[in-house]
Every structure is written in structure tokens, then in C-alpha cells.
Image (cartoon, rainbow, N blue to C red; front, side):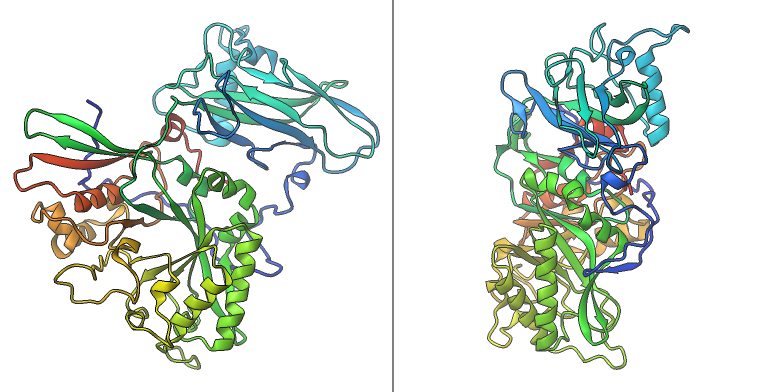
Length: 548
């Protein structure tokens, strides 16, 4: 029987958070002030840069192979393809010829003069340079022949390319990582170099980390729409695409029988944050943290790979602390702000917008008071401007209470795709004894009662409050045995930073959700549980820390 992670975990300690700059950047002519290059890979390296087609502008490319659902899989060899080219900082004065390949000593797992493995030596240098730690197994070496028989470049062991005088880019070299000799229990490192043939000078090196996986397809029907946030000041958004969910039913009425309900990708929607609505010289202006701006400008690298695998990526917009927010806009400001948001969604190929009316700073001197119609008008304007994009809302009640009624003839349920309770308030307007009303026109199947952080990251006081003073606590304390309303949608707060030794533990929001959606009967003869699963490489390596 597979290991079951208990969903009611004790405090595991506060997660280590990365510090970063929180300055804002404007949407038009953004000034990204965190000191990182935003000019593209071709200007970031003095000699030249190897650039991957699948993961542009990255020194480390993480790929899974062997899954028939993955783009680029070859049906005959169960491999994965990519393309590389070398980009120089300026045009050449004369032709140069380059060899693109792994070092022979690495590819063949040769022994050094001191008796050590050259492959292990390179792996250790890689770990130190990129601060990558492991727990458990090392990078594996298949058989006695190293990795040389597993990678082909333009069909051979190496590729020779020439960059002509006056040019800056080489032709593309096709890489094929073959699945046949790779074990799904291990991870493999492929360092690929560009070396000038005439001089032997190393121009650049790129690292591929290959994770073989068993052939898997989505099994069963996911029990709801699963949404999460990620804070770009802490994490690389690409971690969201690595998470899988398994939901299992355990029947203990006569012996023990396990049935899998669902197995497949965890998330349907990822809200990346943070953008803000701020008052700037009388305008309602869309701004960003510098980290959010950086990720958006690099959306091909940080967002598109997830979108290509079916995950919807939306921009989370919050209040900017200037006293102007979603609930006190003029009609002119609504029109202006909607145009800015529409531009951003188009420019950065986003799938939609999430409105979270938190931190606006309403009541500041000189700012208009909250009114009942502003928020509804904004929702209608955004959806009419982008009818094919997702529009979601956090039900904060301070400014959403008015949305329980039609405002200016607008029923917000006609324009919102999903809505959910404010963080850990567990608003439950669809309960039979509810004391609050639902948002006008929002059906229960489009509303989420549960919006929850990682419980392990909460203080002891917060955990006690969750257990003793919330509707969720009734399930955690085994006091309620009927399903909770509003569980066709569930939302997890920011994907937590995975400190060393804690990789893969972000289970609490989903296990709690399942326990509320499918509660155990009073005789405890059965139970339904959720477990998060991640690839081997994500469990063992810091691959998704913020890397800018």
C-alpha cells in the first residue's frame, strides 16, 4: 500500500522566505530596477550564450521524458527533443566554427588520474555553482557507457556549426534525449558545451536535467476546479506545472480496499502576483512589483511552458494603498483602467485576471468614498473587453457585499467565471443556515468556500483558531459528516517556498478540501484523501527558487 500523507499535520516551522525588492513598475515603458538584464539572452553574455528553444534564456533546462502526453515525445524512442543555438553579443568579423557536444570524458564516464569519476566531478562543480543540493540518490549514470548513448545532436555524438562573418546566431542544433537507458527513479545531468574548434575555447555551457517518468495519463475526473496563487517575489512560477494530485477512496467496512478517484495535474488556474491598482495623478493606474514585471516581460520563459500544458495563467490585481480601488472608481477611470488591463493581458499572453480587493487604503483624504456600483461596473467592463478571458474575484465582503444585489442593472454572476471566499474566512453563503448571501448570479458550482494557506506555515495560534473557530474545524475535529457547500472550486494561497528537506509537502489545502467535500461517515468505515505528488527532480533539487 502506498504511503498516505496525513492531512492534519502539526507545525513544521516557518518556511524560509526569500527577500526581494517591492518597488513598483509601470505597464508602459516599465523601468525594472532590480538590476537584472531585461534585454534578452543575446546581450547578457560577453562571449555568447547557448539558448534552448523549449526554455529560452535559461542556463538550466528541466525536462521530463517518457510521458506520451508531453509535446515533443517521439513514439518510437520515448525521447524528448529540443533545439539549441549559440547567440553572440555582436556580429562577427570573421567566420568561426563551433562544436556543440558533451565533453567526451563526461559522456563516457571516464576515470580521472586520481581514480575518481569525471562525471561525478562535473556534477559536484555544477551543484556548487548553482547551489543545488540533493537528498538521497545522486545523479545516475546508466550502465558503464555513461550518457553518451542517450543524447544525439543532429543525429550524432556532436554537431559542428559555423557562424559566418557579419552574423550573430548559429543554425539550430536538434537534441534528442532517448528514454531507453534511463531509469524513472533517477535524474540525469547533461552538460552541453559550445567550443570553438580552432582555438578550443569554451564559449558557453548549458545544463539539461532530464527526469524520466513512467507513461501516465490523467485518470478519472478531477473533483473540482483547483486554483492557486504564486508570489513572484519568492518563487519561480514554473513550479506550479510540476504538481500532481492523487485522490483516493479507502473502504474499511470489510477489510481494506483502495480506489483511485483521480490522478493527474493539480492545478487548473494559476494566479501570478502581484499587480496593483494605484492612483497616479488622478488616474487608476496598473502597476507591478519589479519581480512581477520581470516575470511578465519574460513570460515566454516563466509562464508559457505551463500554458502549453493546459494550465491557465492569470494576473492577480490588488489594491495599491493609495485610497483608490475597485469600489470607488469613476466611469472614466473604469474605462481607462480596463484599457490598461486589456493591453497587459494581450502583451503578456495571459489567460485572464483575478480581482482581489485588498490593500486599497479606502478612506484616504482626497479620495472618493466607496460606492455600490463601481465594482460591478468594473467587472462588466473587463469581461466585455475580454470575453474570451477568465475573470475571477476574491469575495472580501468589505467591498463585495454590495455585489450580492444587482447594481446599475449588473448581476456580477453574468460576468465572473469563478469567485471564492477571502483568505481563511471560509465564507459559506450556500450553507442551509447561512447568514450571508451569495454574490448575485453566482451559482454554487462556481464558488469556492475554501481559500487556505499551507497549515505548516501558520503560527500555533493561527492553527488553533482554524481548528476551534471555523467551519473547517468541524471537519478537522471529526464533528461534521455532511459535505461542505462551495467545494466545486478550491483555492490555495501562495505556493510555499520549498526549503531543503521539505520538498513536496504542500498538501494541506487540498487534503483539507477533500475531507470537507467527501467527509468520512460517522462510523469511520471509509475515508477519502488527497496527496500531492512531484517529480523526483523537484523533490530533490532547488529547481524552482526565484532565479533572477
